[in-house]
Amino acid sequence: MSVILAVLLALGVNGPVHAQDAAQISQLKEQIEQLDQKVRILERKRELEQESAAEKSREVPRVSLGANGLSVTSADSNFVFKIRGYVQFDSRFYPDQQSDSALSGTFLIRRARPILEGTVYRKLDWRVMLDFGAQSSLSSANNALLQEAYLNARLRDEFQIQAGKFKEPVGLERLQSGANLLFVERAYPTQLVPNRDVGAQVQGDLLGSRLHYAVGVFNGVADGGSGDFDTTDDDKDIAGRLFSHPFRHTHIEWLEGVGLGVAGTLGDQSGPMRPFVSAGLQRFFTYRASTAAAQPNVLADGNHWRLSPQAYYYCGPLGLLAEYAISSQEVVQSGGGAGAGERERLAHTGWQVAVSCFVTGEANSFRPVVPAQPVTFSRDGG
Image (cartoon, rainbow, N blue to C red):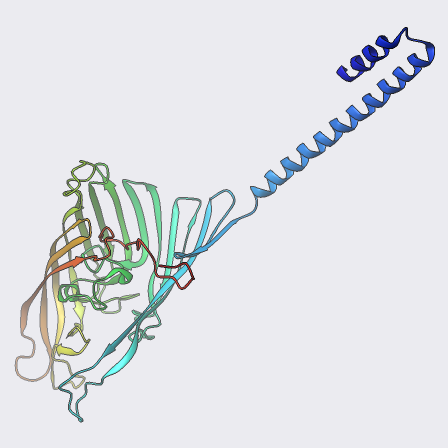
């Protein structure tokens, strides 16, 4: 309308409006109205296109690829799927090895673990982890190839339910990811606590994440062992853990990294017991075992309990991890020979103290640490 007024004023300046001028004005007015209608149609069309694009964007999943692997998230964030993994290369050589020795120097793939994990409806987390490393092979218990397969329902931060095959909540270093260990092999206390087992547990964080608890029922495995199922007995193990960060959220920076806890198991177990191995995974102690009926054979048979006080401290680049483990098992000498049928309670203990420091300045942590300047092969890499 402002354009029409301007035209009228312009025509009015030059003199009175004649019939011809009035017709021109009417024609201009009609053209302007047509242009205005076209502009409105184009604007509406643009609005519809924007609405359609926004609707499509809400239906298209988000895909990202980076240092943490491949991640696919549904548009509504209800479903998440991730693929990642890690490989660890190792070598073992023995300086005093004799030509007829059973010890063999070798390079090996210690761990090769693809990991599939995700979330369903924002509250149900799942994870499957396999291992194709040198010590992983198919067995009757399938205890090495399938490392983990579980579902965790995060109903609340204070109450979660987890079921499947996963680490029993006992050993401190055992609960640390294999990708974040100080050494490729874990210390001796870890050989006295259970590894991965099938069962169910409840867990959660209380008091503003200052106290973590976990308690569960599992098939029960030998010290340091894993298993998918139990064929030796019908008994189950109860495992529990309390771990506290007493100074968390206190703003006392040099104390916030303090963690103190205690864990243990209780149950009855029967069957063969695992040997103990060195850091090079060479057997240095084993229980007497024989397949001959007339020969003695030492087996677990009865009450089995474990106890593991544990602690860590992290401040800046410094880290300290300490734990103690005791495993007490009733055993029986089966088979024939002298002492057949005799019973005894055996107790084994182990401890470790590990100190670490990041010379590159990153904040040390029990969990995986993100490098301040990752190694890269790009031209502008550090």
